[in-house]
Length: 183
Image (cartoon, rainbow, N blue to C red):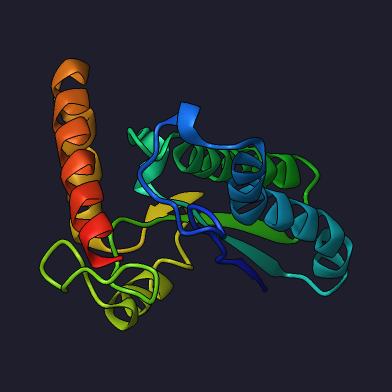
Protein backbone atom coordinates (compact mmCIF):
# COMPACT_ATOMS: atom_id res chain seq x y z
CA UNK A 1 0.00 0.00 0.00
CA UNK A 2 1.20 3.48 -0.86
CA UNK A 3 -0.72 6.24 0.91
CA UNK A 4 -0.01 9.69 -0.54
CA UNK A 5 -1.35 11.98 2.15
CA UNK A 6 0.82 15.04 1.96
CA UNK A 7 -0.20 18.56 1.19
CA UNK A 8 -0.55 22.14 2.23
CA UNK A 9 -0.58 25.66 0.95
CA UNK A 10 3.09 26.44 1.48
CA UNK A 11 6.01 25.87 3.74
CA UNK A 12 5.88 29.59 4.51
CA UNK A 13 2.35 29.45 6.02
CA UNK A 14 1.01 32.15 3.72
CA UNK A 15 -2.57 31.18 3.01
CA UNK A 16 -5.28 33.02 1.13
CA UNK A 17 -3.21 35.04 -1.31
CA UNK A 18 -3.83 36.35 -4.77
CA UNK A 19 -1.81 34.47 -7.37
CA UNK A 20 -0.03 37.73 -8.24
CA UNK A 21 1.20 38.04 -4.63
CA UNK A 22 3.05 34.69 -4.66
CA UNK A 23 6.74 34.56 -5.41
CA UNK A 24 8.21 32.07 -7.83
CA UNK A 25 9.60 30.08 -4.88
CA UNK A 26 6.25 30.01 -3.06
CA UNK A 27 4.48 28.67 -6.15
CA UNK A 28 7.15 25.99 -6.58
CA UNK A 29 6.87 25.06 -2.89
CA UNK A 30 3.09 24.62 -3.14
CA UNK A 31 3.42 22.52 -6.31
CA UNK A 32 6.17 20.38 -4.83
CA UNK A 33 4.35 19.82 -1.53
CA UNK A 34 1.08 18.82 -3.17
CA UNK A 35 2.03 16.95 -6.32
CA UNK A 36 5.72 16.82 -7.10
CA UNK A 37 6.87 14.46 -4.37
CA UNK A 38 3.81 12.18 -4.49
CA UNK A 39 4.02 11.84 -8.27
CA UNK A 40 7.71 10.93 -8.22
CA UNK A 41 7.27 8.58 -5.24
CA UNK A 42 4.37 6.81 -6.95
CA UNK A 43 6.37 6.34 -10.16
CA UNK A 44 9.29 5.01 -8.15
CA UNK A 45 7.11 2.58 -6.13
CA UNK A 46 5.05 1.14 -9.02
CA UNK A 47 7.47 -1.74 -9.81
CA UNK A 48 7.59 -2.78 -6.14
CA UNK A 49 3.83 -2.50 -5.78
CA UNK A 50 3.34 -4.59 -8.94
CA UNK A 51 5.77 -7.25 -7.79
CA UNK A 52 4.08 -7.54 -4.40
CA UNK A 53 0.48 -7.12 -5.63
CA UNK A 54 -2.33 -6.94 -5.29
CA UNK A 55 -1.50 -3.41 -4.19
CA UNK A 56 -3.24 -0.09 -3.78
CA UNK A 57 -2.20 3.53 -4.18
CA UNK A 58 -4.32 5.94 -2.16
CA UNK A 59 -4.08 9.60 -3.13
CA UNK A 60 -5.53 12.28 -0.88
CA UNK A 61 -7.14 15.02 -2.94
CA UNK A 62 -9.43 17.85 -1.95
CA UNK A 63 -12.68 19.58 -2.75
CA UNK A 64 -10.43 22.58 -3.31
CA UNK A 65 -9.74 21.07 -6.74
CA UNK A 66 -13.06 22.63 -7.79
CA UNK A 67 -11.23 25.99 -7.69
CA UNK A 68 -10.99 28.13 -4.57
CA UNK A 69 -10.18 31.83 -4.90
CA UNK A 70 -7.16 33.00 -2.91
CA UNK A 71 -5.90 29.40 -2.96
CA UNK A 72 -5.54 29.14 -6.72
CA UNK A 73 -2.20 27.30 -6.81
CA UNK A 74 -3.26 24.86 -4.07
CA UNK A 75 -6.59 24.29 -5.87
CA UNK A 76 -4.80 23.54 -9.12
CA UNK A 77 -2.55 20.98 -7.45
CA UNK A 78 -5.53 19.18 -5.93
CA UNK A 79 -7.26 19.04 -9.33
CA UNK A 80 -4.02 17.48 -10.62
CA UNK A 81 -4.11 14.80 -7.89
CA UNK A 82 -7.70 13.94 -8.82
CA UNK A 83 -6.87 13.76 -12.53
CA UNK A 84 -3.69 11.75 -11.89
CA UNK A 85 -5.66 9.25 -9.81
CA UNK A 86 -8.17 8.69 -12.63
CA UNK A 87 -5.54 8.54 -15.36
CA UNK A 88 -3.15 6.23 -13.50
CA UNK A 89 -5.91 3.85 -12.43
CA UNK A 90 -7.12 3.61 -16.04
CA UNK A 91 -3.56 3.11 -17.29
CA UNK A 92 -2.91 0.33 -14.79
CA UNK A 93 -6.22 -1.40 -15.60
CA UNK A 94 -5.38 -1.31 -19.31
CA UNK A 95 -2.06 -3.01 -18.50
CA UNK A 96 -3.88 -5.63 -16.39
CA UNK A 97 -1.85 -4.49 -13.41
CA UNK A 98 -2.38 -5.79 -9.89
CA UNK A 99 -2.36 -2.19 -8.62
CA UNK A 100 -5.54 -0.19 -7.96
CA UNK A 101 -5.50 3.58 -7.51
CA UNK A 102 -8.09 5.31 -5.37
CA UNK A 103 -8.39 9.02 -4.69
CA UNK A 104 -10.07 10.36 -1.60
CA UNK A 105 -11.72 13.77 -1.83
CA UNK A 106 -11.44 15.69 1.42
CA UNK A 107 -13.31 18.74 2.64
CA UNK A 108 -12.58 20.64 5.83
CA UNK A 109 -11.11 18.38 8.54
CA UNK A 110 -9.85 19.60 11.91
CA UNK A 111 -6.13 18.87 12.07
CA UNK A 112 -2.80 20.37 13.01
CA UNK A 113 -3.03 22.51 9.88
CA UNK A 114 -6.73 23.37 10.28
CA UNK A 115 -7.75 24.59 13.72
CA UNK A 116 -11.46 24.83 12.80
CA UNK A 117 -13.87 23.58 15.43
CA UNK A 118 -15.49 20.25 14.66
CA UNK A 119 -19.09 20.30 13.50
CA UNK A 120 -21.32 18.46 11.04
CA UNK A 121 -19.26 19.68 8.05
CA UNK A 122 -15.84 19.58 9.72
CA UNK A 123 -15.02 16.27 11.43
CA UNK A 124 -12.00 15.59 13.60
CA UNK A 125 -9.06 13.88 11.89
CA UNK A 126 -9.95 10.63 13.68
CA UNK A 127 -13.60 10.67 12.57
CA UNK A 128 -12.58 11.50 9.00
CA UNK A 129 -9.94 8.75 8.89
CA UNK A 130 -12.39 6.12 10.15
CA UNK A 131 -14.94 7.17 7.54
CA UNK A 132 -12.42 7.36 4.68
CA UNK A 133 -10.87 3.98 5.41
CA UNK A 134 -14.28 2.35 4.93
CA UNK A 135 -14.21 3.56 1.29
CA UNK A 136 -10.95 1.82 0.38
CA UNK A 137 -12.67 -1.28 -1.05
CA UNK A 138 -14.88 0.83 -3.32
CA UNK A 139 -15.04 0.05 -7.03
CA UNK A 140 -14.82 3.79 -7.75
CA UNK A 141 -11.54 5.57 -8.47
CA UNK A 142 -12.55 8.74 -6.59
CA UNK A 143 -14.48 8.62 -3.35
CA UNK A 144 -15.47 11.23 -0.83
CA UNK A 145 -14.09 10.24 2.53
CA UNK A 146 -16.87 11.73 4.68
CA UNK A 147 -20.49 11.78 3.54
CA UNK A 148 -21.24 15.42 4.50
CA UNK A 149 -18.34 16.39 2.22
CA UNK A 150 -20.12 14.51 -0.58
CA UNK A 151 -23.20 16.67 0.05
CA UNK A 152 -21.02 19.79 -0.12
CA UNK A 153 -19.49 18.65 -3.42
CA UNK A 154 -22.90 17.90 -4.89
CA UNK A 155 -24.19 21.33 -3.85
CA UNK A 156 -21.10 23.02 -5.34
CA UNK A 157 -21.83 21.48 -8.74
CA UNK A 158 -25.57 22.10 -8.60
CA UNK A 159 -25.53 25.88 -8.17
CA UNK A 160 -24.83 28.18 -11.12
CA UNK A 161 -21.16 29.04 -11.64
CA UNK A 162 -21.62 32.79 -11.04
CA UNK A 163 -23.28 32.06 -7.69
CA UNK A 164 -20.62 29.50 -6.73
CA UNK A 165 -17.89 32.03 -7.48
CA UNK A 166 -19.60 34.76 -5.47
CA UNK A 167 -20.17 32.46 -2.48
CA UNK A 168 -16.64 31.07 -2.56
CA UNK A 169 -15.01 34.50 -2.89
CA UNK A 170 -16.94 35.79 0.13
CA UNK A 171 -16.29 32.62 2.14
CA UNK A 172 -12.58 32.57 1.38
CA UNK A 173 -12.20 36.30 2.11
CA UNK A 174 -13.86 35.75 5.50
CA UNK A 175 -11.64 32.75 6.22
CA UNK A 176 -8.58 34.82 5.32
CA UNK A 177 -9.60 37.50 7.82
CA UNK A 178 -10.08 34.93 10.60
CA UNK A 179 -6.79 33.19 9.77
CA UNK A 180 -4.81 36.44 9.80
CA UNK A 181 -6.25 37.38 13.20
CA UNK A 182 -5.13 34.06 14.73
CA UNK A 183 -1.57 34.19 13.35
